[in-house]
Length: 126
Figure (cartoon, helix red, strand yellow):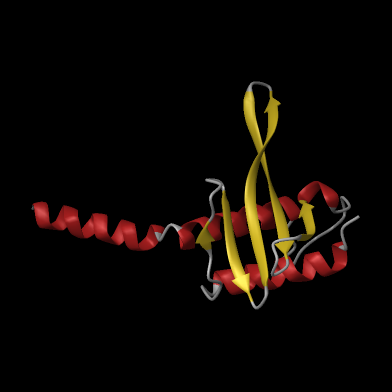
């Protein structure tokens, strides 16, 4: 059973740091997963397929912590938190994990830089 209190605090802290662009998110060998090394630990956020609902694909996110040897220390999904769990800013667990995933993906793939490059390329065509 995950330590939800500690994991919630960790997710909130890493989320805040990601909003401030201070977490070194990188790609992993899994296309829908991103990781950051923090001291001797590695945290990952991964998008995972949950199935279908009325013909629509449904996805969730899993947050994991590994030690320096790569052993899984803990993991949590939005569904692991009790229904009445609210994160900072009164956000639901699934919203917080989705936001963290989106920020990690944008940072690891250097999306903002690539969009700037594309805009500059378009300017040069005129």
